[in-house]
Length: 168
Image (tube, helix red, strand yellow):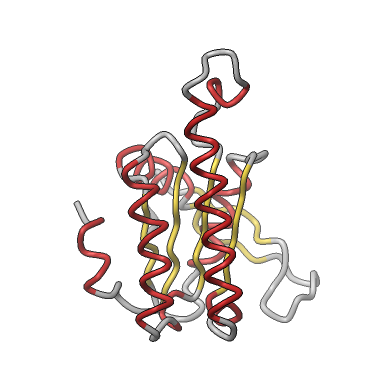
């Protein structure tokens, strides 16, 4: 028996990419939005094929259009540490510029709220301490500047102990 507060919504395609059958999944958008109102960093953990990415996709569709959306698949990003490190430096620089602009009451940024979403997918693939350090640097910056936006980490495993400072 499903919780009466849960909504079943059609999923666009099945795992084979075909549109022959219509699948339904539980819409977790509302609970994720509530969590993100309290905590700027959300960690979504679960076994393979349990709907983590689908839930995050549904959440992002509900807040669309998002002014700044950055999605990093850590399977790909871990292949080239230097390129990933450079991406994170650029992201942090853009965030810093945004924070400065937001302080100007006349800027468009001053009206924005939570216009940034940063998603780290397949975080369980990160085993290199250097890569983890770069991710944590971005998370610390976002958590110390709460009006930037939200960060969502998706993993098949429980978070590394380095993420404990972000736990309530």
